[in-house]
Image (cartoon, rainbow, N blue to C red):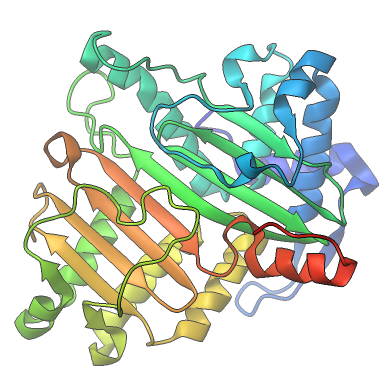
Length: 356
């Protein structure tokens, strides 16, 4: 599963579906014109193919009304969830579920997700059956509403250390919350020893901290002790109390700011192309109106936490549990988690009741 190349998947899907996807030529400054498949078209067609492969009972378990409060409940811990699991799918149905996961992610993001799912087997062996139930097939697929190119619908792929929530509104897609976690952060025994599913998220965070001179580093470190988890946890709205803290990007030199920009772009690049483009636009718009905060130790192996905070998005990363070998990371879109402003505009223009 990890070796699946998303570009090949997209190409074969487009050829298979023919006119099913809306394709355009998108100019890109560095690479020139390239063939581009709209993310929403890909998601819609893939979701409908997945649903068409399910029997009546499976569809009843998979599909939930769009306005159901369940759509905005999300978790990244081992809890009971709604939706159909991989384990409940027949062999011919599973590739279609995999395609739905891939539709919302970049190739890099998909490989991270697949690796995270596979770590359940590593945990099962480490815990020797004494911990919570670990199962790489215990990941849930839930579709909210009816997949279409207009109107409003969404879907969620979720399980232990993975939660991706997509909302499609009148042909536009927003994602969030977008969560990747990893336990262990680094596999330390067995044939997969040395594997780090989220290596760059950790390494580029340290790269920002290490780029800072002592006075700036002192400003960035807001607490000598790392927090036990990301501060926003699984809240519906990603609000942090008070003014942003840490080091403002307008106090950084070019080298330091470039390190911070690389960290932001890493999180942006985990998503599918149109979603990544939206995230990059947010990063560009924020410019130097960004705050970088760190808590905990300054050496690899120390428990640590960081966040990148702007007016439009929030990144959090925490590595404290299990002797600092357990990662939680998230991208929150402050205006568009669960559809946000786009969904409000849709309800207003359609004169439909929204969700409080």
